[in-house]
Image 1: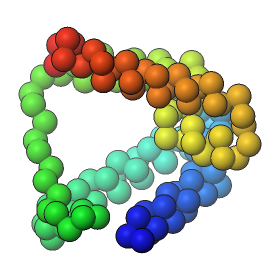
Image 2: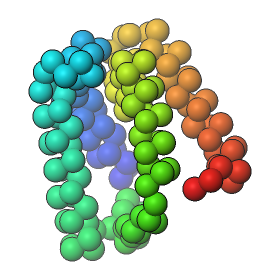
Image 3: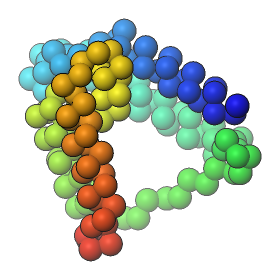
Image 4: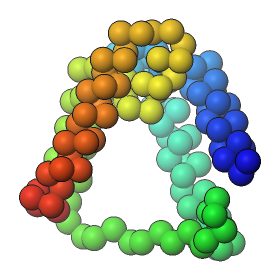
Length: 137
């Protein structure tokens, strides 16, 4: 029953992303062509929300769904892996026309060919899980 509130938040988040056109291929195309501020504004709001949320979690000792304290570890120094990962993520985003979060929203909205992209994203995640220990981190 505790998970119900998180499912509802997910639905509301999906509706907000759909109504704000953040899942629109055209809006993503505009962003990568530097023709519109729309997506950059959404991304900046998400970053600001994340910063505020993390600070609230750290300062108020918020607990997770099971009642355990949320521990946020500092990231290890090093930038190469972040640059490589960011470039790969950006290339995939640009080629497919959506990032991985809105894939579920697009499938739910009835864009069934996106199921192939969702399958590819899940397979890539599975493959990373298999190769994780062999990759430099």
